[in-house]
Image 1 (cartoon, chains in turn cyan, blue):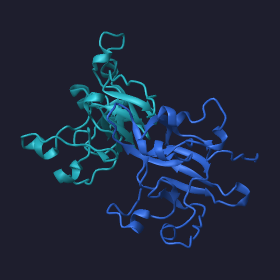
Image 2: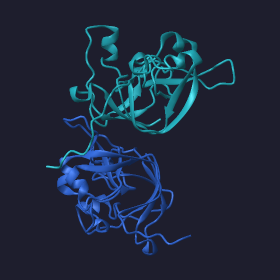
Image 3: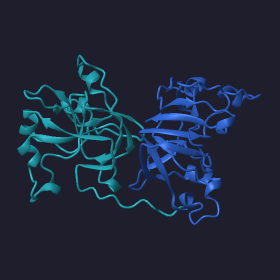
Image 4: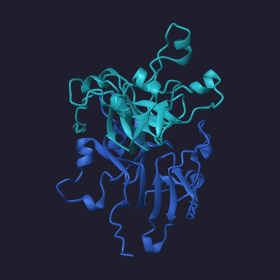
Length: 176
Length: 172
């Protein structure tokens, strides 16, 4: 039996990055500033008033992924607490990354509309999309909801399923 | 252009992303070549684990488990011993000897028929995780067919002066 080389992964943020693709600072839309967001949130482009690249919550279309949440526990009581909201910016990832995130859909789209809630079971190598609110999911919610832009684009693969030993984080290989 | 020494299974000209991952018991028991295609598989522990690709990616493993170039060194066999491999994805330009040399059908029912590669052709992983131009999901009747998970282009075809290595541009 091989000895274990892989070190412990400390999951102290919404989105833990193992290797990264492209990263760029973008302006966030007013509705995101008002609602806040988690690390790993899917975003899509929208129109801003200035000469800025502006993103808002994904409705299944991308964009990219916001690396840091707007108000994460790990960012409290630091000199930069709340700076993304204050300065209306965020760091957007696109390209190929390997990440682990708590920002994914736990329950099926249909059961979120009409409880009782039915858990989603993820499997390694499943294709992932952004849900209608920009969270990772294996359901094509644009198709399920009859959105005119259906079907959703494929945005990643499951690299690790959520389980107790990984704090129920979802491992994702992004393909954005 | 300087001479390219092809002393390993996979010779990298420019690189994309690389990350160490745990390897499955199947890979440990069988061994693998550099540029072996891999896919994700679940593990009981909190680790990212891969196994041999069946046409799906993931990515590929940079170094083979027991390459000639790694013999009689301080790290000979260390990937097998420690249960890890270097997982690669993103954009790469590389030369490799790990590709399908014969058609899927002829491997099942010889005589072997060589595959002729052409510059610019799109490549997938075969059902055993080697680069190929054939859609082996369709040829094998896999219910997931067709395999449209293209992961590379042919940049240079295998021939005598490149030691019959194929040069590919990866895009994973």
